[in-house]
Image 1 (cartoon, rainbow, N blue to C red):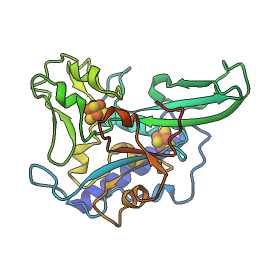
Image 2 (image 1 turned 30 degrees about the horizontal axis):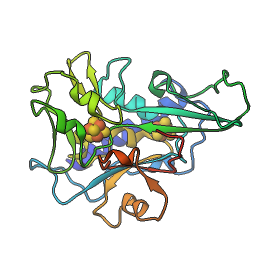
Image 3 (image 1 turned 120 degrees about the vertical axis):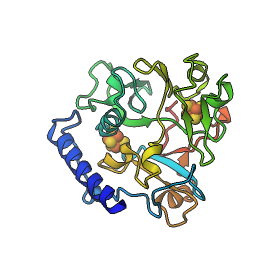
Image 4 (image 1 turned 180 degrees about the vertical axis):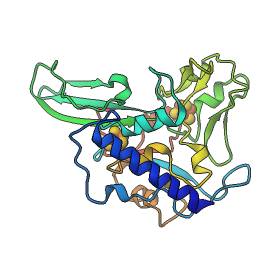
Amino acid sequence: MMDAIQSEISRDRRAFIKKVLGGTIAGSLLLVIPAGAMDVPEQIPGMREQEGPFIKGKKFVFIVDITRCIGCGSCCVADKNEYQVPDGNYRTWVERYVIDDHDNVYVDSPNGGLDGYQKPRTDIPHPVRDTFFVPKLCNMCEKPSCVQVCPVGATYQTKDGFVLIDQKRCVACSYCVQACPYSVRFINPKTKTADKCTWCYHRVRKGLLPACVNVCPVQARKFGDVNDRNSEVYKILHQPHVVSVLKPGMGNKPSLHYVGLRREVV
Ligand code: SF4
Ligand code: SF4
């Protein structure tokens, strides 16, 4: 079963990245793909399909490496395809930060970064000294304020640490949308319920990486079990001084970490 899933996903992934690079899916045509980047394993090491109600013995974390992201938007396209996200709504998006030589900071995210950032900004009056890209998604907080405010228990935290939404219970009051300090929630105009990134819980339960991680051509998105000392995420998180979280003062304890997070990022 797992072999069949793996070979199907490998085929899909190769075809997807080929389309992005060929320009038939929106994305930067100026990509420089490091050697071996497309050989990322699509399975989560040590994970098999889970049959119980939750995944036991693992603590999943997501890591975004800002120093690697090239703003191609492949992750956003993969997410939109995986969930049929209605136009104008984003479960994950990529922001572009541009800093000029007067230290002014300009941030934009046209169409959530879905089309890639193929053209530089032309509306900045001073010479640009730096540009970088920051993917955003649910921080899968250990202390999620969205769960605390939901009046009907539709937003909940699983025993394996995922924050999910029970669409049958959601009454679309938007309390969670307002309570999320990271602005990752929206009311889905199709389902008329709250929606957000789930870190692809349905894929993870099968031992597969989240869709966005799977397609990133430069491995800027990483996902894994931090209880596994051999995992890449364990090794990254145990290096000194290289990772941080967004808005640590909010007390939400995000499970999403950033490598190379800059002080300009909010
Ligand atoms: S980032 Fe927002 S939606 Fe996600 S768990 Fe935290 S508070 Fe909830
Ligand atoms: S995270 Fe990866 S796939 Fe997404 S924009 Fe950055 S480089 Fe592209």
